[in-house]
Image (cartoon, rainbow, N blue to C red; front, top):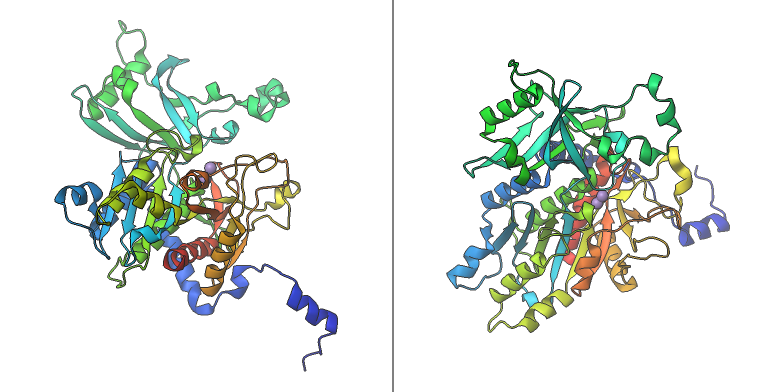
Length: 484
Ligand code: MN
Ligand code: MN
């Protein structure tokens, strides 16, 4: 027989709040969906390790699903109608797409936005040199990394280079079975007495992140840099490039391994670049679903928009980053094709009445480093979608700080759809901080809230997330696109 609850117990149940693990509350029928979604995600991110590749994967699906280029829509001089689906591919690096809703776009849009770039190691513009019998690629890292984490792991080379005929060559070495990989070396412990005394941000410096390209000399006594020539010769055979062509190339080194299940219970996923492809993928899937993809019926009430941007890890700069006018321009095109007698006011109204989830990862509570987290407001792996009212550092500086009214609205939508959410505040006060793309949407008048998936070891070459948070985020973004 169940014991009678005391008055205090009943009162505590009514008044206090506890965030439980989603694994404890999930319905049995949903377990397979969680596992299957994780498998689809793993496959997708293994194919899309760079912003260009992720963009290309998304684009091919959009085209399959009947999305049309917004520039085509602009040129045909016919207004868009509810159910129409359009996209804009921004230089192969960022992407925005929309499913036109039944309501006028002037009523506002529901937007999910994420970034598809991740920290990595980029080639310099004149990278190849020879030293100690090795040909070596000189690099400059991209994004906020701990340098030392990128040594002694297998790396793959991705990117584009134009050959001397001006033809674009796509490079991808180190991903296929049997491909060679690349590596950044580290000093052996036996000779590291001085190195081990240094601070962590100095013991492997940025300039020491050079990548081994090869070691076999070209057999010719007359040649000075023989190993370098071997490598240039191989590159020339494969891509038709000469040394000068590095000057315009974009070559990126990323971890060569695939995503893997982590833990005996397989509840977690380890991979390169969960930040922010786990949120980008879930946002992408949710927006596709809202657009009626995969044979689903249904036209969204409000226009549903998905924004996948580049360059977040270096401050959202450049014309493919969230600070550019790319997104605003797309919405202007959309308005001009949706509203009779379009004027700039229509665009301003549409933006000001819009709502956005800025989908970006959050720092999951890490028991190894528990003392930097505030346990009451930290996000936890397995507890659902993390909502960050504010980001920023040193007194919320740089955060966009969502309004109470908007936060309440989002929480109510998530609750209505049974989507489990938790807090997501980055660390204890004055322990550091960070920012996302929310502020750039907020600048346009959009209500924006940061929310995403908790991640362990953020910006490391092997980050970890929970499968159930991935699935929960997908359901959360879908609920928001439907009901915000
Ligand atoms: Mn991020
Ligand atoms: Mn990041």
